Length: 416
Ligand SMILES: Cc1ncc(COP(=O)(O)O)c(C=O)c1O
Image (cartoon, rainbow, N blue to C red):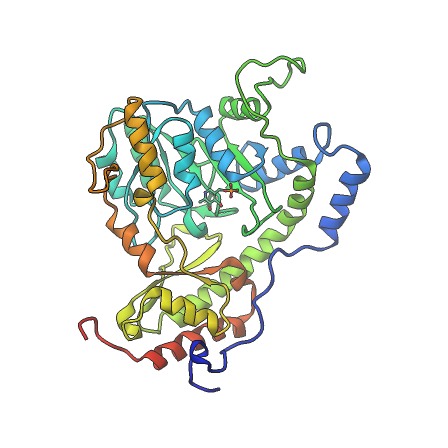
């Protein structure tokens, strides 16, 4: 193999793609045909109810309510918890925007607490300092499929009388000390969007062990109806957030495949972690024995430019992709505390009675600084979940590509 880097015109480390995503077989086809032929494509069908029951059971929860996507699941659950104007919700800045924008859409203010760089999840040690009399809930995200520290978070919530909504949109089947995530807190949300480990293109579900919250979510997602009520009886203001039978048909089949896929991702993630850990400057996030099941939506590494000739993370990911590791990504490029849409909303919410923020030079609120999340957006490399569905030779090719880039660029200390 030529040592000239592929990005400079050399031969790539690998030519074959990683396993394609999504994966489906005759089970999805059979379920979809059943829906087609039943003529019950929405209300009146049985697939959504079946999936709600199976997925809730899979997550160790008593109740499940399917919705069109994870974003709406978050907004609806915040609504169910009574979060509204004047309230504050503590969450992480290193996540997809929906985690925070759902709070804003409820008229409440997201308050960002920095992450722990060993987990990339909210750092529980920093939460209490962010609690004010307006705080109503904590929304931890089980980022990448790695459960946040639910012992610490539940303890803080109990002591301060706060609700906990788990954003488990990347964490199907993940487990914290033997308990599946989603229903450890008051409510949990999951996404089945295209990139997710179980997908129907779009889709979402809410789970809970709290019957009253389960009923409230059912009503909110079904235009305020009540289960035993008349068709045109609407007791609260809700939306039409019902999932279609097509989505549930696909998800029922996808769920059957998930345990085997998770086991394969787990074995590959452990192998890749071990082998990559020997390369200077690239550090997979450490495993934690309290995480009894990681869902491995993303494989996350911290990147140190000094070990790669001072080249930036963006240059590294471009070189890695050129070597044939096309599932590599820079991930989130801006922490949400620096997102201008969120900062503008924070200003608008102040005018509506939300908290006053100091202003930055650009005239927008300077939301609480989150240096770890800011560092992470510049020094992180993601590999998407389908990378981990390959075999050990696929994992070796990643290590080979990283090593080749390191040799090509040479090691250099930070001050050179
Ligand atoms: C952490 C997190 N929260 C929320 C969402 C929103 O889910 P959806 O794309 O299904 O609306 C996603 C997924 O994109 C996510 O990764």
